[in-house]
Amino acid sequence: MQAAEADVLVVGGGPAGLGAALAAADAGADVVLVERYGFLGGNATAALVMPWMSFHTRRPQPPRLGDVGLFPTDHGEGEPVVAGKHIEVIDRLIEAGGALPPSVATGYTVPFDPEVFKTVALDLLDASGVRYLVHAFASGVRTPGRAAEVVFETKSGPVVVTARATIDCTGDGDVAAAAGAPFEIGREPDGLVQPMTLMFRLVGYDAAAFGAYVGEHPDQWRSVHGLWDLVDEATAAGDLDLAREDILFFGSAHPGEVAVNSTRVSQVFGTDVFELTRAEAVSHRQMSQVAAFLRDYVPGFADSYVAQSGVQVGVRETRRILGGYVLTGEDILTARKFDDVIARGTYPVDIHNPHGKGTVLRSVPAGDAYDVPLRCLLPRDVDDLLTAGRCISGTHEAHSSYRVTPTAMATGQAAGVCAALAAARGCAPRRVEIGAVQAELIRQGADLGSRGHEDAAAVEA
Ligand SMILES: Cc1cc2nc3c(=O)[nH]c(=O)nc-3n(C[C@H](O)[C@H](O)[C@H](O)COP(=O)(O)OP(=O)(O)OC[C@H]3O[C@@H](n4cnc5c(N)ncnc54)[C@H](O)[C@@H]3O)c2cc1C
Image (tube, rainbow, N blue to C red):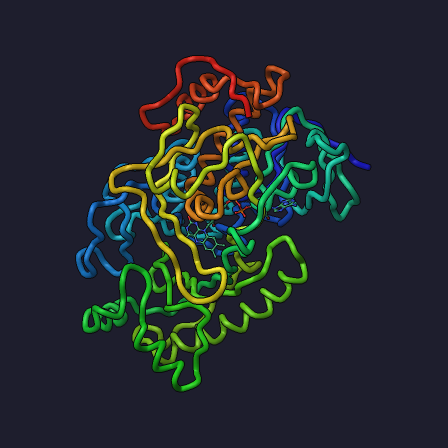
């Protein structure tokens, strides 16, 4: 069996894994990042989740259509609350011509080109000295209750990576679950998770023609979704059987292109290969139907076609690994603050109905942000492990907010810092003083609001 060693092992190369690896290296650790696909980016590239959601505080009133272009959201023009590695990545994407900066015109989202993201991620890892291995799937740990030795299945046979601290950035909490950390899946009381969506890039889109249609039918397009009358017409004609309530799409970094988020497969679990198989089959057929609907019914799309679909159906929610604190929907909606803050978020509670049509959207108070405490990244029962990204400790409601890319990167950066400090001190991540983690995060440019902790109390998970 082949083997490698590192101070810090990061499993998963999505937004959280990228943030974690860059931060751990910046904090002085020798880092290995391992990813199952042949490229980096996670949902942002594999599932074509192309807009970075807003990381700005919400404005008091949603913008009116026409004031701010075709793709406004109700975020901004408030303060940004996520900085650090996340801003480094966005700046590099913009420099490379692969993203638009957040502004009124983009609804404070960051539309980016996933192909540019893949290369920027490699460049950043190379520049920071992170070693990486792709095409390697974490299938288990060698010692139950510990994550120090993770086993990867590869084309060359199994590879074992041994590390002083491991960070599970798989989105699904695969390593944490294998090591025996407790977790929850789905909502109370029925355990259902948010639906999956196969996203796709549609090119040949005429923004002026679509804008003219929306200008004449302002009741048919709100924020980045709508077209209710056309959906009804196509449904009555038997041309469309939409699994969600309306059409949702985002502008991209390139003119003439949109990212469509309108397929929906409910009651499927992303940790079950048979259900994933069903989701791929259903969502690809839905994609063909939605693309035909846009082409045949919606002004501005007559010459459009699907240029690319996700390498895989986008999985919103799977395991939530239980940590020293479980972040709740109430924490999000009251913009709760914690002494052991390591990241902040502003994105609403956004639950795509686990059963069928409908989406619940509940905002963080205007002008404010919530904290994510370090305890949410420290799994119970497994000492040498941290989690980051969408598998951290929270309820189904809280997860629907912190799952977005900016917050995932911010928790990744925090996990990377904590793991690097733990490795340097030869202690468990939960024994690292919160003051030291916060000080290093601030040195790395992270935004912790005004509550960076001064004292050196150990965080007990
Ligand atoms: C359809 C959809 C639409 C969304 N829309 C938006 C949006 O518009 N804006 C926004 O900001 N966010 C959006 N999100 C949320 C956001 O994309 C994700 O939640 C975010 O990517 C989470 O980052 P992550 O790094 O935690 O996980 P992921 O992005 O899931 O990354 C996990 C990485 O780990 C790898 N991996 C998994 N298992 C293993 C294993 N066992 N071994 C090795 N590697 C492994 C994966 O290949 C992947 O690279 C959306 C999500 C979905 C699914």
